[in-house]
Image (cartoon, rainbow, N blue to C red):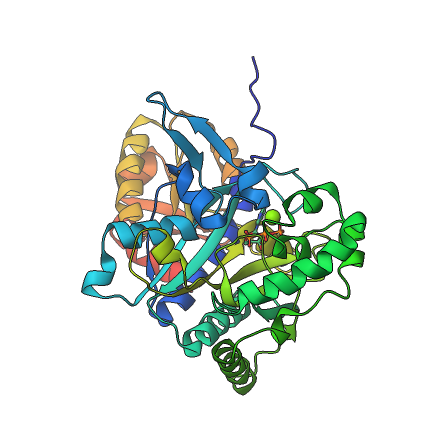
Length: 419
Ligand code: ATP
Ligand code: MG
């Protein structure tokens, strides 16, 4: 019986893994230079963690979560995003007691039961960062600069930063009322989903992808005009810092994001090369979330990058094929095999990528295999070579070959690797 993977869940095969390792490596490098440390959090959490933080009337919580009842009756959910778990860990470990300011990053799989299509999976992967404990606009700008630097490091160009502010507990309720009054006039034009949740969460309507809803809300009041003085000052400084550091952005007052915990600065990086799944990274400030999850009143700001979408964008440019072994050891006869097994082991410990066969094969078939694996050098040993204490070393590109004393093999191969 042949069992297939679940719809929307896919393997990242060895041929495709290189760009993943590449972007993960770059993220570690760039994020470390901004003094972020990695945090690893569980993939499974209590359902209430997500319903409380992301919000009951969001698409994620209403229809996208993989939730099940555990054997003891508790409700568990495969994480649909990373921020809730990071904040839970921050509160649970009381990190804020020793040092409230924490800059954390994570990478790994997330799960949402959406309709699978290009750039949209049910198991997808994010690289995310969260800065907890800082309310100042410099950290908002720093997060965006870090993303800009990360995109530059991986060679992504042409992504656009869309920016908005969602206000705070002071000014957002006022905007909410204004928007609701507007929506009530347009109610007949909205989709069933928006009509249903409009009263409880009117901002959600601005995030709806239905053409009718987009059209009906074209003239909706802008949240940027409802910001209180503090939020406006905060946002003005973020914008100024971005301008001073040459980060281009466009204001988008409809950008409310699909999660309820955001406040003040919110943003998305989009690419026009991704079709309708055009957001590569998204995030914002969430000043109420730590407290909502049982911690003290501590602000936060973060983002998440979608790795599938990012690697789709890089695929055209990345031509780096995985390199073959640096040495393939060909042996003929049992004594040579035993010598080869030891030699391979010694060379690997020197950091060389080395391969050999375990079963007896003809010289010709081993050479063909070395070729297929794209080995750079081949080391050949048989009874004669063992006798002389010298092997034959062949360079696969130049096809030059020469005898080499066993004692010199390591040094020679290491020097070839360095070139
Ligand atoms: P979208 O607007 O595409 O639905 P979102 O607003 O739901 O995205 P976030 O929750 O902000 O996405 O997640 C951040 C990033 O994670 C997205 O910008 C995207 O790159 C990626 N992402 C989100 N959902 C998926 C998915 N189902 N498959 C692949 N990547 C995803
Ligand atoms: Mg979504």
